[in-house]
Length: 88
Image (tube, rainbow, N blue to C red; front, side, top):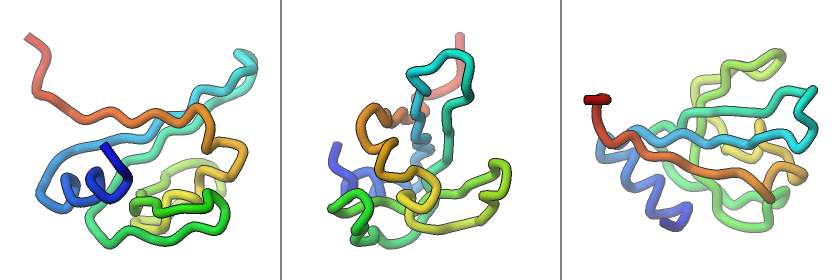
């Protein structure tokens, strides 16, 4: 899905998280939940990005452009996951 499509899905109630796995296994990665809102043109990611909620150290906000928490170095390797239902 495109960034715009993911934002539309979240606006309709879908649960989508963004995940970046640090290539250095001794350092932490990054996770954020997408939240309802409007897509944002990001100069950092050089394209449209969805809105996200951050709860990490020194990065706590209810809704900002995803690129605020995921800097340009995290553009490559960030994956998105949509909740599909409870485990059976």
